[in-house]
Image 1: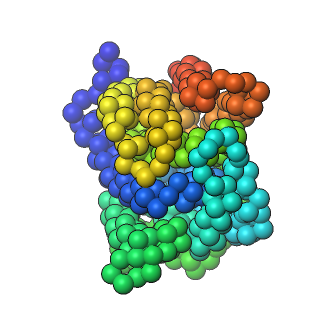
Image 2: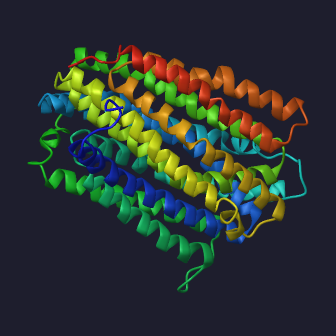
Image 3: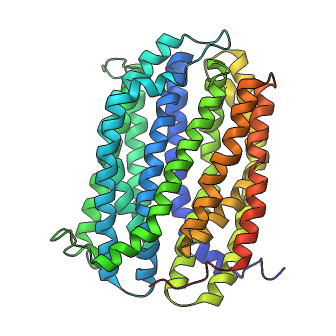
Length: 457
């Protein structure tokens, strides 16, 4: 048991890294929840249109995370070994990837955005107007495109700062951004203080504005505190990256980027499978995901802690200590997720009542929330196992463990059940979530083998 429980100093270190990330992500998702509720007060069609576009934006966002993660693995290890020049090169690699993916995202959404939205709009219940939902979704997407580049640059700066141990500043910038987002959402969605009531367009404008504010704050702080961020000195004098390092990042990061793209695309595909049962299901899952995202910050933040702590220990050559602390982090993640899941389950019957929508939607949302709550410990373990493997550079294994599993197991299951059976959508949703147990078993076996325990720098 002592292998799974750390001392006070261990938990102090974990919480020092985790809490700022958790606060930043928690506030962001809490404000996103308020945004969603505000849009939900306008109507089901508006809420569903925004939900569909956010599902598409989710794919872009995760691709950005994947693009910076490969360089981030080496960046954390470079910092652990005291190599600031290596961190600087990793930062430049992130910049090139972020700009490239942002341009690609703009082209895809501008050219095929309408077709992508229509994939999620199907008859299947008496709830909602499909054409109205499409119109609101199109309006929202058009304005959201302005925020793609600032979002990607924020991830580049914030990720590098966290890898070098600076978690407070990204948190502060994130808090400022969500405050701006919340205030302008209230003003622009409902037309307060003399502003026009713009509905979903107001929600998009507020989101884009908040991303520019966050980018401004984090860029100014990073460049005016060079003593704390030596990697930033001269970072833009050249975009040169030594080929051996670029090659190493590509070898490490490409499977990770492909994995994130396929995984997020897989999540979008699963959502599309659910959507064939009608707009009531789309609205219900949107409500459930909104509250789930607030609680998911627990295991997501702990995953970041795994990546940072284990990555720095591996980079410093402390391999035995890395393996020992990883066991404790895995156990801590599961326990925290059990507590979060309990709270989430208790509020499941209450949360959907906040929305101005039909009773059918509320009932579906309650069941979806309860299922997600029960599965929280599974999510916690698989996420921590994923970041453990990734911190040791085993990105090909994580590719098989994550996205290949989604496409070979989860998607075929949901596709068949949603389209070719009359099984109730709640049971279909439960079956999909329980596939996470299989991933837990695979993740446990992979982590226990210990092949991830290596110093890459």
